[in-house]
Image 1 (cartoon, protein in one colour):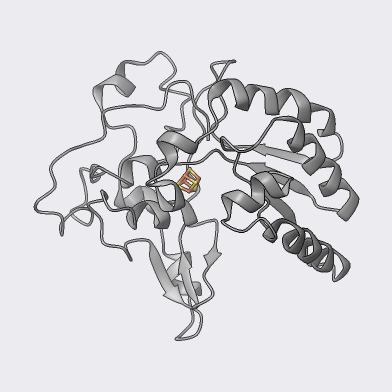
Image 2 (cartoon, protein in one colour; image 1 turned 90 degrees about the vertical axis):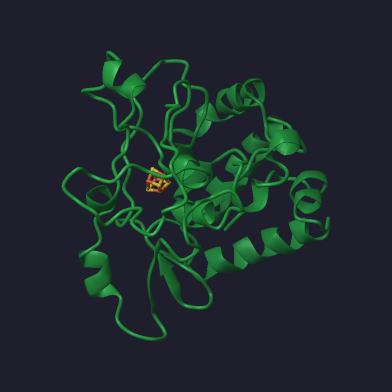
Length: 244
Ligand code: SF4
């Protein structure tokens, strides 16, 4: 469940209705009471202040959440039009990390795209292993890929990453047979190839590429981009400085 900050003036305003904060907190408590709550998701933005993420973590501990996933606003999905003016900056992300570190022994703190101050190699991609089921039954191989493909600038069809629908038929075979890395090549540009970390680098999150460019197809496959005859750009900007 998503709480984008822990105040009516942040979560509520971000969601377009300040009363939605109290409603969401109450709903989280009901899910927790029914033992259905797994974790809380949050999108830091210009309306949030770092200390409220400590309050969010306190709340997560109180209701028995296993994790708090924090992911700054991206330039696709909800953030396609607002990312440039609403996203939390690197200083805010560092401050959020500092005020939430003390919860690490009680929560799994999942930090997406925080400043990579330790210069760790980029993480790998697990598309196809993470399920995302929409209320209409559609199953995406990864929610971020699906959001990215639906972004206006994406050259991909909107349903590129929908593998089935639970209301219209079984999806297990389609998911078992899905292999993102057999369809698309990540990190195929020369910058990645010459980086000293390339042997240990997972190449980061390809959703940022999908939102605006065409991924390279594996040399042994014609499956990817065969329907993208008008698109010719390839990913050239690795995510140095960011982790997924
Ligand atoms: S790295 Fe990105 S595209 Fe891959 S599974 Fe994670 S969020 Fe999805």
